[in-house]
Length: 154
Image (cartoon, rainbow, N blue to C red):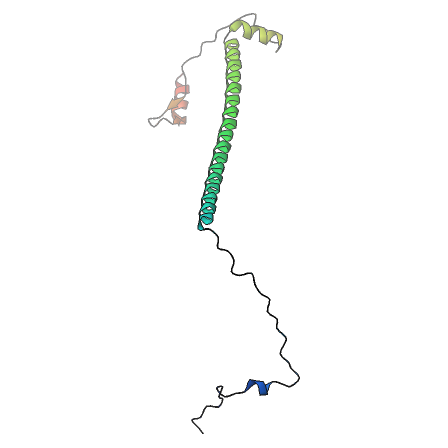
């Protein structure tokens, strides 16, 4: 019996193996309505075309929305730049007026007298300076010994 299979399924009686208390359930068959009607293949084609149109329109809408957003951002940047340019022009104009006032000797005298409390001198004297005693060497640096020698020669 070494070569015989341990189990055999071809002559097993399942009815005898079931306990006697178990019964098979009563099964009743409900008559059906027949096979479902087939859907026309043209409906699927129409659905695919409709899906493609919706997809294309949504992509176009998103692209248009992005372009509108970019245009609005550029418009805002342009307005800010225009305001900055107007501010710079106004500042330049004010600086030109101030520069012309500061180059006018009458305005400077009036401002010094009225705003700063300054007055023009009564007499003007001229001081004539002698020859400079500071001496530089050949490298361009100040030479203390040369300066002292120039002072001694005076």
